[in-house]
Image (cartoon, rainbow, N blue to C red; front, side, top):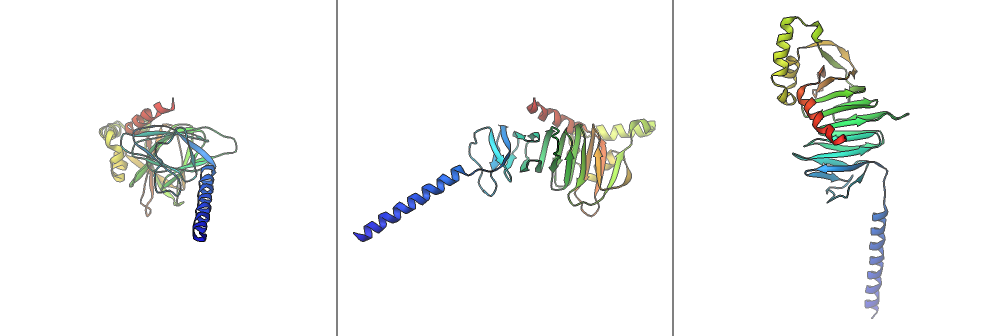
Length: 258
């Protein structure tokens, strides 16, 4: 009898503990700086410190520090952040950092950031840090290179490790000779659709970029694209007009912002 009573008491305490734990789990909250508003195709949402994706999230879904949004082929996602909105392209992964920053671990994303007094929004990749002042820009993070294309506003780009970069800039058309312009047209426009897959040195040669100086950061101008290599020993950055492939991707992703 006593054994039976002890068993019932233990079962009761276990049920209370389990109920309390579940109650705490359902009421736990975190500081939410973003939300997943829309998705198309297969999009995975992984909470911080969890190895498993969230199944069938109800939209909009609140995102907290450390949460990841990942897309596969032919998938896209719209993320609303306190700093603005981000459209995540296919085969991409984005992490929420805090109220003023997001990190694109891989892939491409279109950022539309609003100015907020007293706040400086920062977009990061494993290679670069982008300081934003109210703007629309596209970031592509790949193993061999990173690209930042600016469509509106202003951004400053520097490396995560703080290393100075060899800064190259495409000569403006107004400064080219006729022969240089013909060569530029032939090199720059014949392979635009494959430009993001080109090796960094091939891209530099294609753009006929000229060395300017060693710099710690670059203030990018509207309509320009900054391409950086991932070689930590000899960092380089190429400033050139936004190419057609990136421009086409921007137009495709921009539709989700309208």
